Image (cartoon, rainbow over all chains, first blue to last red; front, side, top):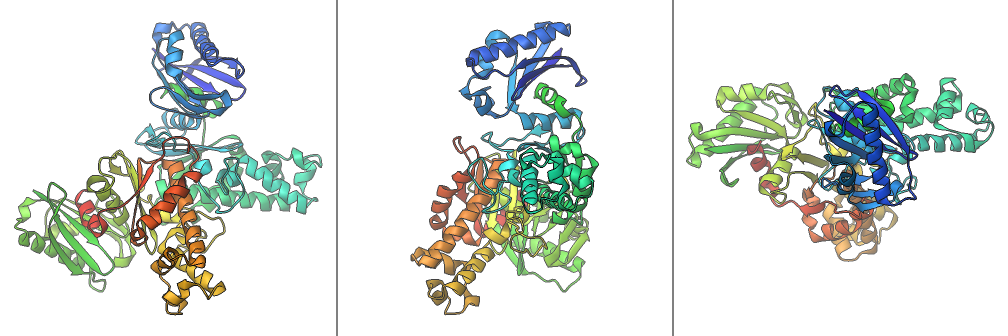
Length: 311
Length: 311
């Protein structure tokens, strides 16, 4: 028997056939099409599962379940409540999918799925509680308690990115102000870099971006800081301080066994972790006690299909 | 069989004998003495338990367990890690207590204990998940998940009061800046009231305090707002807005079945709840879905002994 994970992304939908050792023994991809009817979208996914399984030498009856990670929220009845990217609002994903491939189907948010993947087969393997934070364009998060995803009683939890970190702060795409992802995402680091070069055009940040502030990326700021550009060092230090306060806040409230960091910004590796591990305990209220470790995610883009298959 | 709850407060230590219906069938109190040795403190408590039980017609062998709620943190081995008020740091409470009264002993933080009490015998009875927030001099909180207290892997969680709500904000007694309790506690409301009357000495807030800003209490601001004093209405509105953002942040991250509000400020009743219930959904990211109810705690000062006995 195998399990199948489907990872629905903005440009592509990945399918992974996962064996009992959490290894990917088959992979397939189809483009993310949003201009076709819902049934056709689901049919394409079911077909990709069958094709990918067949290529891996797996018959449909050998598929124990199909798990789906979505950039949105779903309920335990297998309905997608909201998945804006796909144009899905209250759609009966499970029942439609089973018309094409009749296997058990479970659906969850993609950050929850990645959290589960890391806790089952990744860096937090063997722990019973963890908080996974993915730092990219926004901030995604997944909470694992007693080995299971905790996404709340109504299924609307795990949204660390929209916890308020700064009253009356930077306006967020969600309509509120001061959301955590406005200070801790790659987008935040880009904004801070652009603001800094407006005041300090002599910064390496601007020259590395070819003189065009619009071309500043998170890595532009990080690479400039690595090279000791004073403005970049200042900006990056401030960003780390925000992230340290955000993680300490999670710890003060939830105190998981481990905090796992993934997403684009985590590619900075030690250059992220070294200052973060130094700064974060300052904001933990009981920091004279053992406190959670912070670790880098290890599964990368595989987390989506592996975690979905573990749902 | 009965259970016994001990509630360690700043001025008094309460003992409650609790029956199988979560009713208090006997009560006792001793003063909180901090200038006597630890063993003597514990012996006094054990004696108060025996005396209170005897008065309620309960023999020691009928005591199933003793639970203790402390303003601090403890571990599952029955050691108090830190209870600053009592001067306890890494003390073997359980083993010392059992020298005087040999029954099972469990210890937890007082806000966790109150959260458990409300979820077992109070307003959140019958729910599987809840977050209890007590709004007094500081902010205490307790998280219930799957019917059990979640105080973290290292036992340092549930400290909502020290989640950062405002980067670089008001300095906190803990040494950090912008902690949630600096904006949402009774102390915060007092600070905001004092700041307001400095700019607006004509406010009813000041006259209700006899013209002395030092005499402004949380209820002074609340009562002035009730009477439509414009300055107080403004201050209280801002306070409600902060509290709404704090609660929505908890919901965005944890999404419990219900949020329970207790503590001194909760005595404002509907005057607190009405605006809070109106404002808080604005800050919930998936507010087009069912979201947690907010309810007032009902057990009041009984929560301490009842919850401790449920540990």
